[in-house]
Length: 219
Image 1 (cartoon, rainbow, N blue to C red):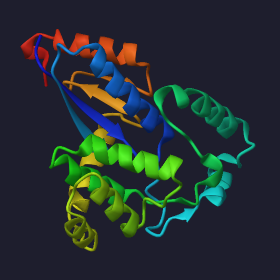
Image 2 (image 1 turned 120 degrees about the vertical axis):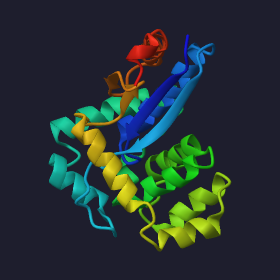
Image 3 (image 1 turned 135 degrees about the vertical axis):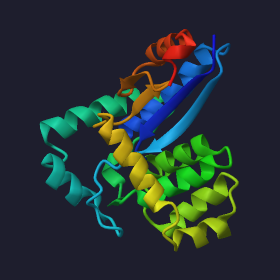
């Protein structure tokens, strides 16, 4: 079986993405004989949010109709039930800000260049959903960078620039052009996709399928 390349499209303020990221790590453990390369790709669920962010509860009320709306309540109950088994804690009630995630995506990109993309994603998810930190703030992003072993001073300096914003915008436009409308989305060898936080067993089957594709079908 050949190596499998997966583009994992996500947004660090998407709770399903944290669940999906954990399931993805578990899935790879189910197929240890198949080498897998994962590249995290950017997707903003709401790019209209200002750089300073918006108060979380106000945002939820406007977007979903509030915590008590049927749609949000059902989503929240499912996530809070599924989270503990995956080692995840969701503290929806105490999240202070809904940030713009451009800079968080930049941090993931820079970390990925150092082989620490998964660490950055996990650090961002945990900071936002469990520790209730504003991951749109440069100070928080710098702290996360330092915690995963990146040069905090360099990251702080880069965050004051527009470095890689254009690259991320192009990447997101590309994945939207492919039909990605929600995250997480796992694209296997450029040949097929699995959308949503599917169970590890489902993702492991997708890895096996991708690994068995003839070379001419690989992208």
